[in-house]
Length: 262
Image (tube, rainbow, N blue to C red; front, top):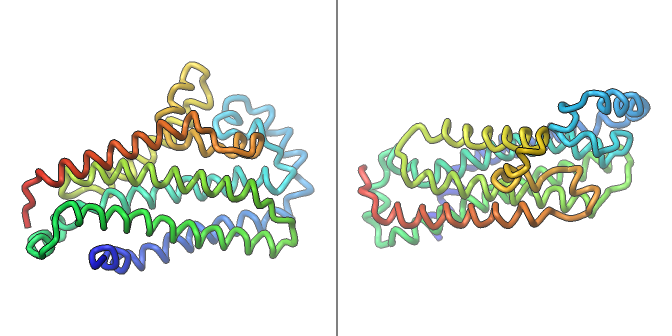
């Protein structure tokens, strides 16, 4: 597990920065809730009259007057966008960086197969994402305790679980792409995460575009769906997991055949 440990160690600073940035932003949203609670009835009325904009972010099915509704929108935006970008960057860098940093020759001269290299890098990618999500989850719990509100455990666990799976999917897609490229991967990863977020907005606005929910991992992270049904939508989750697995398999095939340049 040498490669696995080295990958975690090399991303230590990124884990700390991204985890605390996202976690503290989510916590800040929660800490603002008591000051905004008295104004939430007016906010609900305002959003209800904003048509497609409200639907785009799922705010037409949530009650801002409750902490769980407020958290689903505000916390969801922070965790969704930030987590997706982080997962994309970690995933797309995994196999690419050895060539970009010219360490591929050193790595592949060791008595390890390419399959082992891929497997350990994939495991480290998922482990890094899990570490980030644990830190964010702890920040969320701490902030709810600080404002003396009851913790909505089931919704919170489902909510964060959905975003964890979403990040796995994006990381898996970008991991597959990583096997094909040698540089400029960060921009590609961020672009994919941004595109997936945009596709979900389009799907929320237009009934004709609902099919996009089966493509974008943000389809099964809708806070309104999770809170109202107390479950993750498996109709959108299963296609997403299939896409992730296919991209990972492609990474194995491509990287094993790839002419690695140092």
